Structures are given as structure tokens and as C-alpha cells.
Image (cartoon, rainbow, N blue to C red; front, side, top):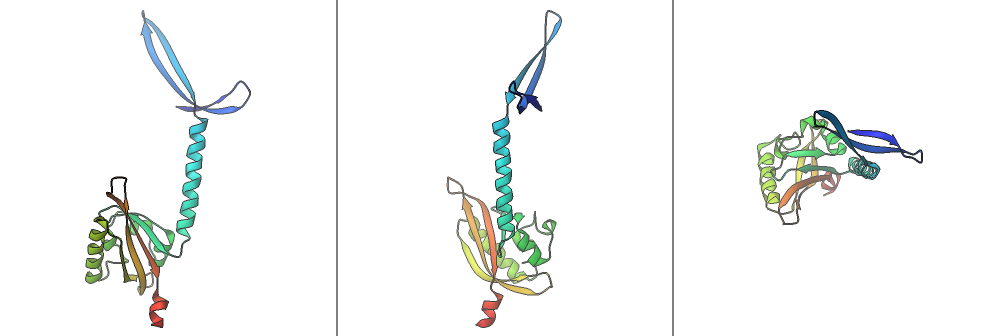
Length: 173
């Protein structure tokens, strides 16, 4: 259990306390261990701060960005992607990318995404222009990528899907 204690110099410190009960000759005894966990708490807070900074950056990108399992199941998505689609995280988290509202609107697009996920799962970076369903029911032309992330042994451990709106560029052609 974690508690606060006071160091002999007066400083308040975070401690981990473990207490055990035991019996010797019919008498009940307790033994305890206190461990200073200030460094662990400092590292945990630094990690939380880093995660918050990273989330703020990702959520404020103009790009639609997410994270998927190697099987294409969405585990995270940035705010931009949700806003563009008029979606909530529960609309996409836990679904495969091809089942999300962005791509499930047309069988041909859904099939293309399934094929692209298979290619990314095999370690290939996949990039193509696709139409994405957006909030108003319209379509947005996007430069889409699926980038596999590899572990130290070269195995795909996740896939990063991303998309950038190129609708205006396509109109100028």
C-alpha cells in the first residue's frame, strides 16, 4: 500500500508499505517494510506528462491518425479523424478499419482497405488515394497510408493508419 510519510528532515515522502503477520510460540508478530518510492512517482508523472504532450500534438495535427493491431482493429484515433467523420471514439475503437464509417460505405472501398491491411500486416507500407466518408455524409479525397510498426525481431506489432485531405488538390487537376 502507498502512503505518505515524513522524513527526519521534515520532507513529506511517498512510501510503499508492506506488512506481514506471523506467529512464533503462540505470539502474534508483525513485520513491515517501508520503501521510498519518490523516484518511481517522479518517473510515472514524467511519463504521464509526456503522454499528454504527445496526445496534444497528435490530436492537433491536420492529418487523420490512428493505431491498429496487426489485424486492422482500431485501438486509438486522433481527435481530427473523429471530428472529420463526425464520430465518437466508440464508433471506431474495436472495429477493423474497413468496418469504420470512413470506409464501410461502399463494398469496393471496404475490400480495398481489407487488402491494404493484409499488405501492411505483411510488413509493406501501403499508400493510395481514397475517398473517405465524412461527417456531412459527403466524401473527402485523402492520401491514405498504412505503416507497419515492427518490433526488434522484425514482426509487425501494430499498424499506423493516416490520411491527409487532398480534396482541393484533386479539384485543381
